[in-house]
Length: 163
Image 1: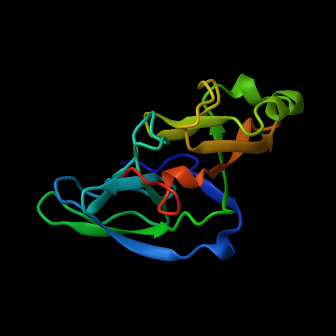
Image 2: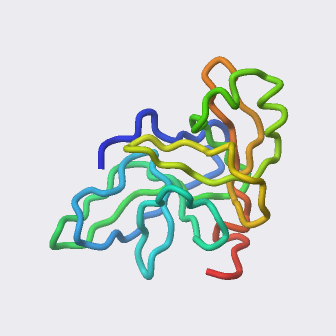
């Protein structure tokens, strides 16, 4: 997969996290790139897809580096473990929904999902707020229409009782 441009980044709290290595199944070649959200898939991790970010997935972190699996051999990927308190930054799917501070303020604590269009990861602020959504908007930058968000513990190892 091509590098997400720009990748999802940890805006605050990176020193609170730590790296973990996770297995990526064979069948693709370097499918997970830096800045890509990942989820549990059987005993492996896989790239999230558009619409992920809910309690029906177990989110395993953001890729620190590219995965190294091949079509015939499993590999691994370095992840930033999704500890509570990390603040992430990424674009908004609909940039006009976050191009003023007033619009960003109106999104505060809204629970939404990821969007993947081509190779570009964004947060879809137009999603209906739902308790099963695990991407919680906590701020943003109106000059770039980027949003700041945190994972709800309900979609991570720390609080997901269903996956």
